[in-house]
Length: 293
Image (tube, rainbow, N blue to C red; front, top):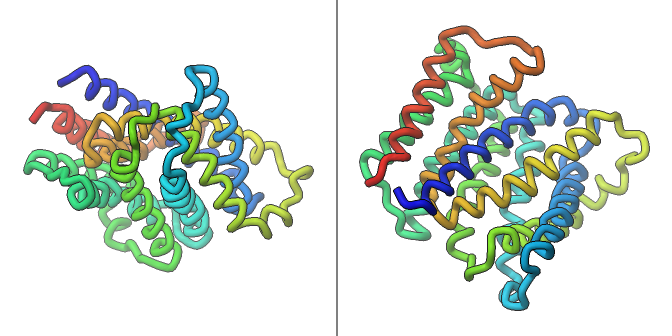
């Protein structure tokens, strides 16, 4: 494995762990603020942080401003994922939504094949299928009855559209990048996303009583803006420039396992031992993906 590829894998390992926190904290903050208001603030704060980092590490070259429509496309697509996720969670059960999310790596692999001609080998396809099965096992805590009772409603359908956007985003990063550094490219994406979400959610933003929001909202906003946006966006784009789309998105299979660990650390309970079977399956899938072709 090349050094660049190894760094890409390490970036996505950290990505999967950091994203998990947004689920645990987001559930507590969601009832107190509109999805568009939360995500407009999230993208704006993250854009300022990443923009400052870009200026401090070499600046933003004039060449990065070529074809600004690229940032609008990427920012709109990734911003729509977050808005649709929160919109879907208004009616979708968390377990059902998480099950929908596990379809993202396979969809990303499909879009990578169409857009970048990144075709999967049988081993990668098998790894993705094992990872998906393991993630679903973790999500449903080893309860086959719960899996069989899965019902797809409006919320799940809305979130599925968001997951499609997430899957498209990964190969698009490589397709649209013209040599810009990840931090610079991320800044353009976040800035464009902030503008688009703010315009779309201007009514909800104006109606939000920002001065009286509970502390959990501000804590969650700080976390998702700094950790789950600025940091993870940079990690995702860094990895997407070094790994095939299928391998990048495969790390999302680890997120449910990270969520379980975080929930246990927060004192929300420990899952039954049978769930460990799913964790082992996701780790096995990642081991298969780490192996060179």
